[in-house]
Image 1 (cartoon, rainbow, N blue to C red):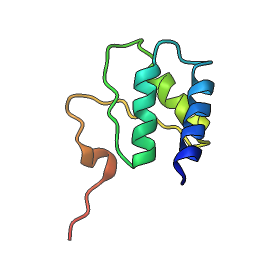
Image 2 (cartoon, rainbow, N blue to C red):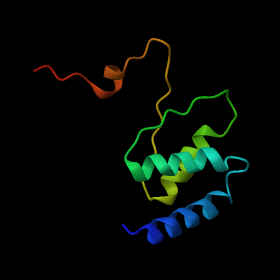
Image 3 (cartoon, rainbow, N blue to C red):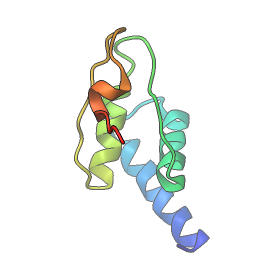
Image 4 (cartoon, rainbow, N blue to C red):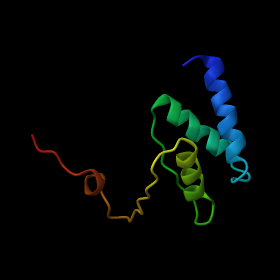
Length: 86
């Protein structure tokens, strides 16, 4: 993907997201960086800070399916991903 195309796409996503998300410009930009670079993101914060809304908005913008995992202190990654014994 060309840089100008990526910049245009990012700007369009930012513009659409700003219609839903207020005051979350930097976190949303970091989410898009992770998306375009193939990275992972862990959203942490106190309740009511629009973490789920931000993730749902990004999923909607890229026409992806959104699911949410509610973590508890005793939840392990293998509980979600499973184990593969070789």
